[in-house]
Image (cartoon, rainbow, N blue to C red; front, top):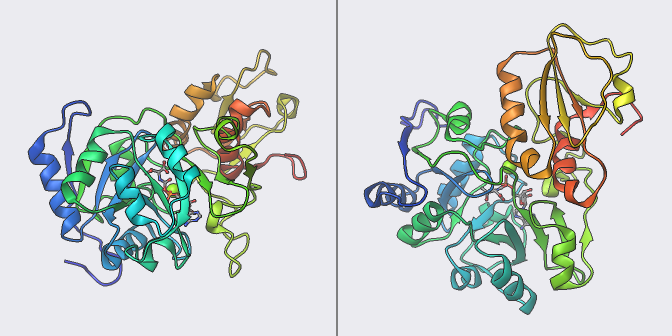
Length: 348
Ligand code: TXA
Ligand code: MG
């Protein structure tokens, strides 16, 4: 029953499925739900996505309802292959084909002019559409079987931390969606790089696993959108409203340098997340919970899980020591900037 407005009190089925050898009946069940306008969460290599038939405005609107997502923030369309991508685009430039050939299936989302088969609901009325081929077998098999492109944002409540496990999806969206396929933890753990090919010079709208450097090898100069807001969240009608994104529920601050921790008045219940290679830290209280994410790979993979773990501990504060300002840390730094506020105002 769709009890008024948000569809609460749906029965959410959770089905385990093998990532290497997915069960055909479970895939069929998922595809059938998608075809009939329902919502299915599944793992991609980045984070869990919440999928709906991208050609159905009604199905896509449900995604916005259950996530409580602002209607101006467009969704990524997931396709099984390049032919399906071209069918979602009004124009498929040579550079799109080159990028797709090189990085798909994989964590690169390409923004191109949209085809008329993609409803306004997906693109939030924009003339462009964001498309990618996810790397997991399960995701591509569902798209294949459903026979339609699948619009899928990260399967979390809007503004919160993206899910890297089925249990995270259940926490956020249980009772609101039809099916969660539990494919185990995601391998990359951070959302795809989003690159806009509709501007004269390609522009990274969201940094991710595929770096600016890698893209410049293929495309020549690539600009990076300044990270004041989450991509399209800088809606003129509500500037600043969503400046905090990917954020835990617990108050979270970031130090500019480990020296800021020197005389810090630690609250009683507090966690420190050390991201990057820190050799020396100031003396820390014995009661402090500490999490270390020393390499970009570990930080990408585990950051969201650590943030969710911190929320579960019901702390007064999360303090993050961010990684160095180096290219390999760009995507992690971007998410941390949005998930936290500066510890000392005016510093970054
Ligand atoms: O790794 C990922 O990309 C995951 C998995 C599930 O594929 N998906 C994901 O979706 O992170 P979501 O909705 O949480 O983020 C999509 C991002 C948003 O920041 C949105 O603003 C941007 O892509 N986006 C979508 N369509 C766009 C468009 N037409 N133009 C510019 N940005 C767009
Ligand atoms: Mg998201």
